[in-house]
Length: 158
Image 1 (cartoon, rainbow, N blue to C red):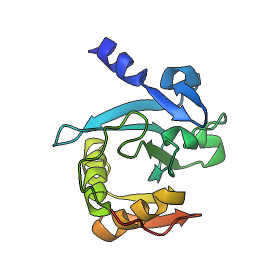
Image 2: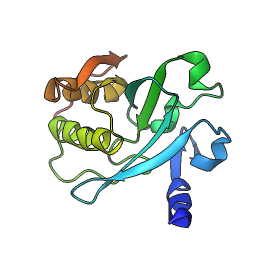
Image 3: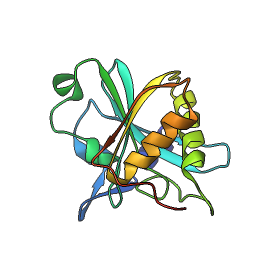
Image 4: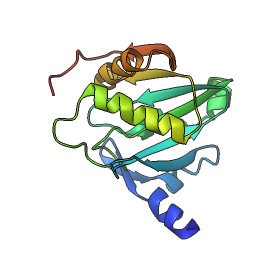
């Protein structure tokens, strides 16, 4: 099982024009993982720090690795537990099913939050990740304590 986890962590994730493996980051504070959703799809994520959980959603053509820094998150944002995910179809996450919607993504994120035992959290999205963050806040009002859309696009029709 440990070997399987290492292989899973070794999945290639794109960052700009180069490919990066999770273990190549050489950042021991970054914990990589994945969650198998009820429908069998995978959501890949990494987390760092401890404190207030903040799910971070990347923009189009990016991945969860956009949120990795050379400096530990505890130095940049003390008291924050950053949980960056690969949105469906990016990096190590499975492609979304046909007719996937922002609401469906909110349900997927709720499953991931349950998997990580995170009852309440903040969510932030950059660029095209912004509409996903706002959808999560709208769909999960009892769980989301704050939401941010950073340099965000308007929602796309799916």
